[in-house]
Image (tube, rainbow, N blue to C red; front, top):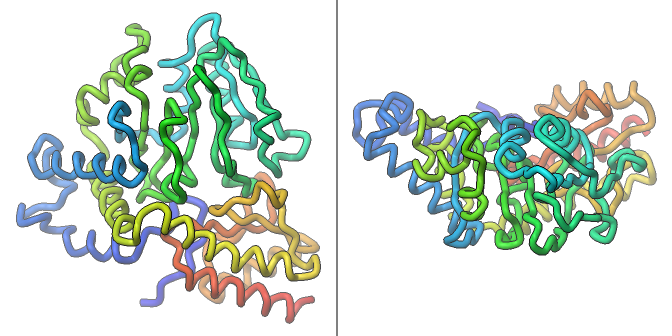
Length: 361
């Protein structure tokens, strides 16, 4: 079977080696006579999967021992509400960096819980850049500062993070977690939906400093308190067991590839192929994001007309390329080049773009 050139924004590509290993173990996991999907989440076999996934995450990201790692459900969208429910205090506004659609959704949910302020915004630039660190004004009494490290729709990414002092820094890293090394100790909370860089949809990882885990109102229902899940090692209720198992396999794959630093170089090599075509096209392809904010995960670009963009998508699909149509809110074109997207796919896309320009330029 020919594999598609998968540039979907999410759910997205999963390493072929991981899919093949999951296929081998699908019916009979480690001699249990059943699939991982069929066994109790209280069983020793599944607890080993859960513990191994947490240990691999800690190793790969260098997560300090005083941080909890939780595998939850509901995606990043549930975290948009769960965070302020646990961390937003009366008289201490939640500060948000407004950088696009995903940041806007987080802000909307926080406003339902309590006072919020915009610490910085790039709305005037149509969210085609990330703010400079000097632009971010964090109130000294803020409950936390929230940012979205990578905006999938605009194709923008923070390449450095602010020092927020005593104010906890919170990051939605759904679309670039494990794509590059980060200093976890700079953050109070990191969360990410799995379906872009970690595995299939269904699991959400939350990395949280212990003091923030424990400091939450006891009036919140148990399922929405981080302390509940941290104490139970993510086994308070039935977890998304198959998704966590797949995340564990992806983490092992990253480890085998040499770790996060090697993934970053791999991602830079991949995206350079496509950005070089855009920049060398004489304006035929126009990059959307400001150059200093360009994402290593989502490459957004335009052609001279919507008709030409539709033709590009149509012709690309005939050649086996999937997911190159831009988000419906902004149009244009987008190639999502997450960790699992092979170099060969990016080489093929770069060549297709050159050929398309030659045929239609």
